[in-house]
Amino acid sequence: NRAIKVMLHTILKSAERQGIIDRNCASSDLIEPVTGTKGDKQIFEDLESIKQFIQCINLETDIRKKVAFSLFINLGIRSTELVGLEWKDFDFEKEQVSICRDSIYAPGFGVVTKETKTKKSSRTISIPSNLISLLKQYKDYWEKEKSLHGNLWINTDRLFTTWDGKNMAGSTVAKWLRKFEEDNNLKLVTPHGLRHTNITMQLVNGVDIKTVSARAGHSNISTTLNIYTHYTSEADKKASNLINKLLF
Image (tube, rainbow, N blue to C red):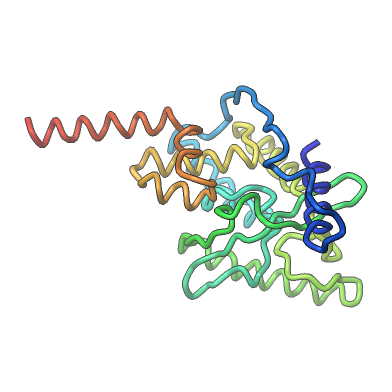
């Protein structure tokens, strides 16, 4: 179970830092990585299906879900990064957000917060202008909810919480998304599938690989290239065709 491994690594890392143990035995350089074949990812493959998904989002009456799904498709962030977002991470004037933490459910411990997956996963990325007004509306809703629950509300800055302000698990947002897609007769795409949809959309439309990789928070460009070989090959063909047109 990934969550248990993450929790164990976090505890041992803290113990190593405090000098309680000499070495974190769960460190990535001491454990052989799990290898295997990655299956095809379910994504929205064409512009029409993406537009249909966005149209359905615009009709959603629950502003929490509206914001969550909009952040997934517009920013391509991981579900653990989404539920780890706090209001202080946003700069509405610069239209930017800083991704700097993961929030993960660990059996027996509940929802725990940790640093992002890798150093490159901590990043500041631009937010599409259309999202700013939605986020401001959600901030107003969030403040009212906080005020409504008074002393029952846990002191938090998280965008997505349970009714009393406690940290929310990423699985909750995944359930929201599945029901939303079922209710709207959409293809069943997971939060991670929306991340892949966002990255694929950038690559197909000619965004350079360095920018795509940085926005995705991949540890290096080769990670992006390895996962999206098919789409980068298509871009390579387009480049060849363009050169052919220009020169011949």
